[in-house]
Image 1 (cartoon, rainbow, N blue to C red):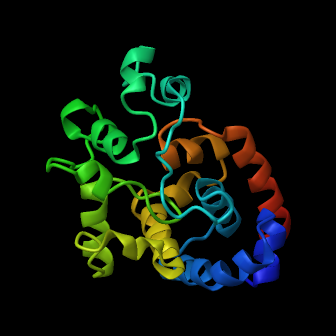
Image 2 (image 1 turned 135 degrees about the vertical axis):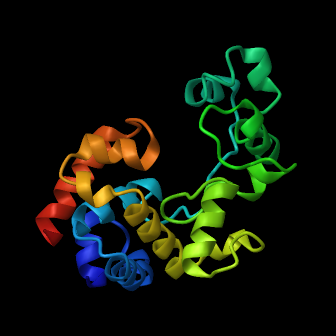
Length: 201
């Protein structure tokens, strides 16, 4: 995939396409991604068109926190304590002690240390450990390795392969559920997928 094709497929800026075309292509080959258009579209959405390689947890209003994390913030008073404090927020919402879907975050500070990074926004000590085992990259001791374009794309390819995304890639709804556990951004993902298919299919 060329930078020009990546730019056409997603609408990302040309400079961004130059930085990510090769890493994404390399990851797709390494992990036998057979649905390249769908992979590109989903990762473009997850990373704000390849411009956000780290989760933004800086919420400035309690109302937005209540909207995004209703399970954790049922009242404005509770949410107020976590506005404008990304580290405190990450350690609260990603602490296994209060989660149904465990992330392996059992040590103090794990929520912030292993917040979402990479094109897929890999999250949690367990996911970092699994990726480290697969890639031999020391992301547990140096999580910011996932901010490098090559590693950001590689970790996305690993996630795609290890969770069986190719098997459901023709169904954008099912694929979105695998990627983020729900239907967040489904309409935008559908539009991106159609655009990417027209260029890359």
